[in-house]
Length: 392
Image (tube, rainbow, N blue to C red; front, side, top):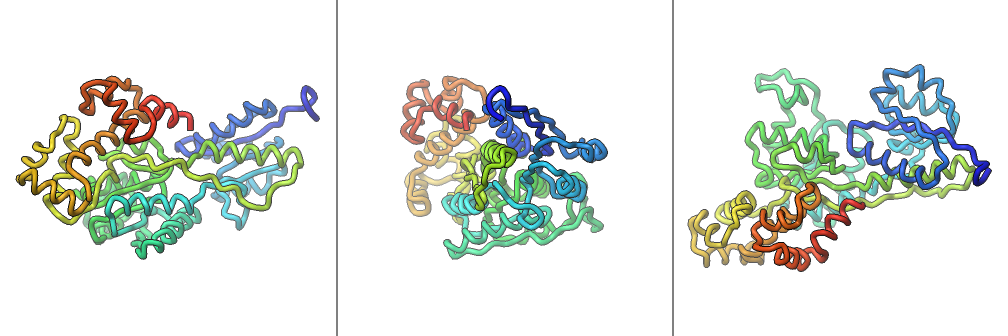
């Protein structure tokens, strides 16, 4: 059937809406369907599915895109007789048609920490599921190129029975706290996703473990509702979930049209690491330099000068310059400019503040001067950076 004779397919999306990854998947799927104009959607998230199992059992549409790995979800997915894709598949029960390139995520995480001077690495997950274990192995594999190893958080249990205070919202037992404290510092910790990074960041704040000076924390998903509510805000890998959803919709469409499919899994590369304060640090062993870097990061809004930094750490400008050259092969002024630009990127990505206002906030006298400096450092203008990021 083609053109006006083509009947609209009935497609069910069984995808969580409580997380940014799921919502972005749905956005990518609906973008594909809007372009094709051939689907009618029905959306059911996990909570609604658990409360309306009888309705699900009666579903007899044409297609299904799901993210399920629990018993009820698996049962419904097996039972459904139409064309279907499970975006939480592990290639054991269901084939993987499209997924995030976790190998690339692991490589990006290692490079991110390494470039910031971290030489101790750890991986944190609140549960060793298939996907979190796979992401861990990708991280470990990338570390081999640097002849480095990784500390894996042991399997923790829910609820604690020790004398220490209960951890975040009655979460995991105290073994997580002991594990974090036992790690060699400073350490870069790659987390299975932003939910796990959120838990770990709150735990560190609760018990006075400095982020990022002692523990730099990196998540996956760039879930802004989580990343921006920790203190400091979390850096995270943007997984390009919209494109994963778009590709999955294309595969399902081909299935429903009885078109041949490629035997290989489609890998979608992550977009970038969205750098926020949880990893915006340079790991150094010199206490004076470490304090100078911390002061620059926390006081950059005060229109800092190199003399201000030298005064704060009680050394001469010459000594400060020598420390920067010895450990970082840069200068205090270059670090001040770098931190300003990272802050500018965050404001352009995450707020509606005008370029003119941003230029004042980060210490430039005119928007034109800021724009020239930003373009020189980043390669594109502030307005183009904002547009490019939001169109991804």
